Image (cartoon, rainbow, N blue to C red):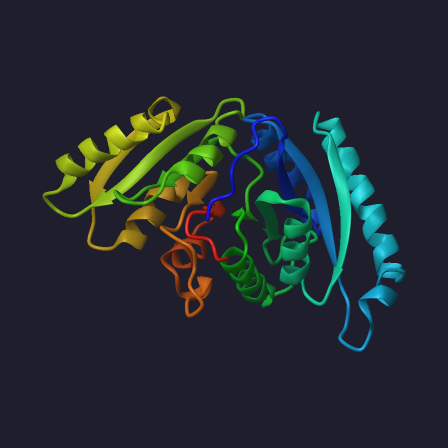
Length: 284
């Protein structure tokens, strides 16, 4: 069931922040999102507690003290960027459980999290990306909120590529597009890979849908044909700064991000990637 929208109270945007390597990127993305509509932004850090330690005991651990200091620095960065935020330290057994608990307790309408690439300054160690993806898969499957997972690889966010399919929902894609085009000098392209002989129909359909969603004026639409969807998107994204990938629906229990088309595209790109799951069809 879709939650009714309260137009008088700003919706809550929960930003999962855990690493100095992604803090400034997440603040920047959150500020762009907050420029599109009123958001109550809460920067959230999850402190993981081992099974043999009670969550109550974990609340007074040195890790919580460190997390509070880290969040205060991140909130300072946000304030410098003109973004007022709240701060929340959530103690939980795992990152996904902590994010889900925070989202439920604060009625979050969107969850944004970031991942730094292995080898980057402050970046995650090798092998962590798969664990991160699986944790975010569990978050996307179990929350009613929109979920945006950002994999930051480039500093710039000016050249934006949005692969789109004929039937995919555009609500969340549109929200992210509107935010990204707030960046000065942003150049956005919607990109569709059609079946051979279906280019004209696909262009007509997508043009109508984009205009119907109020997105047509944000950028241009390119339609091409190719034998392999993934190869075509990767080739077109060669000069992109950021690529937005919006799966057609929520991941099911038997699915994993690891085997999804989105992941296969994301792991081959040099650009930053935003993976987005809309609240349509969210788990109860």
